[in-house]
Length: 625
Image 1 (cartoon, rainbow, N blue to C red):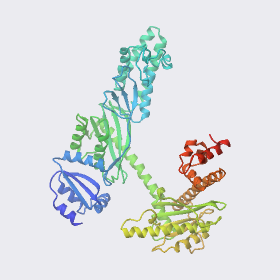
Image 2 (spheres, one colour):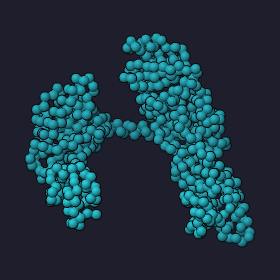
Image 3 (tube, rainbow, N blue to C red):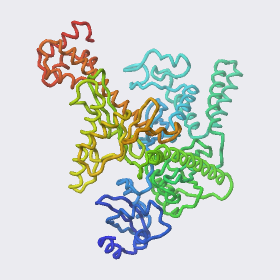
Image 4 (cartoon, one colour):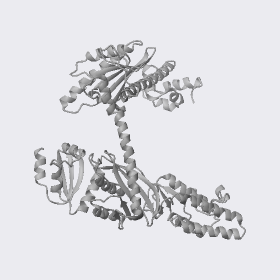
């Protein structure tokens, strides 16, 4: 432990507050404490209860700061704000970018619409929701628009005949789906009466609305107004269909969220059931990153982070397991909501059953994620270990680079370098090379050129990084293992090229011949053949195929540009400099053909006569658009 940490630990007060762990000046963890002295000191005393994540964090702590608070609630609020601001690496963070939809009715309008929105605003409108996904909202809106003759148009004009008003109603009115307030055929009071029923329906008073509609149907039938009665009948059927989806499970009570947590060994899964007016409206799942096995802390962090950004907080939050700081979290959520929020752990009855259902969902999701991690690890890190055994390496390769050559009858020769780190593609580190020293179709010499260029630059930049005391990255991050697409001859040329570069340590290298998927090693005549179902073989096939794809794609692009360049050579007055400018400005020939005269003039280096010459060349040949 460094002297700065020792001194600061010795000076810690016995006070509530928050602490910020730092590395190189960056905040890597924010925590709260009732007693800062006891809490912070615990990190720096070895304990078998420390999780691997805590041990890794402590090893990285170079400094820490504290902020004193008057009480635990203040500390909790400050912790939540700082986590949201800095998003420290070792904190448990909610991975969620969802915005839940609402149904909105702007009561300030004379004839309001019922519409889907993504956020609740303080604008005096009525909001219903949040709903779990836009599909649910669209189902509800479809029922409303088919059951009630609402306006759906977005016209902004004065309703009724006159300035901006319509004299003829639209097709929806003729189909009986709109009262056509734009024509002045309906009074605001009539429209409001219909809107009251819709608000009742959206507020959960479904039975009242259905019963009222049934009465209207019976009255119309008694008057022998059969078309009107059929309309009410269809309205009832539509409403009951959407309600049936919400009546699968129901408990007594109002609005509540039911939560449970389970871990997959890396992250925590939070399963949520949304109860509105005693009915299950829907469910969702959330991931708390880097939570390991800390279920109680994960639940607390979820409650703070999720409801901090939520537009709606229910009056009751049901959780399956006790929460250590439940009272403090309750106070914070109650302050945000403006009314009392209860966090409960039910012991019996329907609520207990709902909590168990949430727990079952969380465990199921966590179990599937764990299986996915195991499979992913087998395909990546596990495959690297398996490959090391097959090649006789005494280390597991972290960075693998694959090289391939592509050309067409010796023209436009290019090479590709693709990178896999811990068995996964690192696409931001892929590179293309244009072959400079080789004439004609000579893949062996081309491979030697590329290997020489890559490792000459890489070793130079690695030494420069070490001199500066920084971590080598980019080209300076040299591979542990190199895959050459080809057999023993390609491998031999690559080996000679790399050993011509003065290096402290040379990476292992092998060739992969595609015909029989045989692995060739330097200095070994007989190839290695891996089991066709092995993860090691699948890994090197992915690297080889990616190198091939990357080279081919670049080669096609060059061929296309070479074709365009050839066409431009036919344009009078367009020399090499302007050809390069045009090729740089336009991605392909079609864009150049479709360009206007002004577009061509805007290309750097072009003037009016040269732009006119290019424009005339394509348009006189009937190619321009």
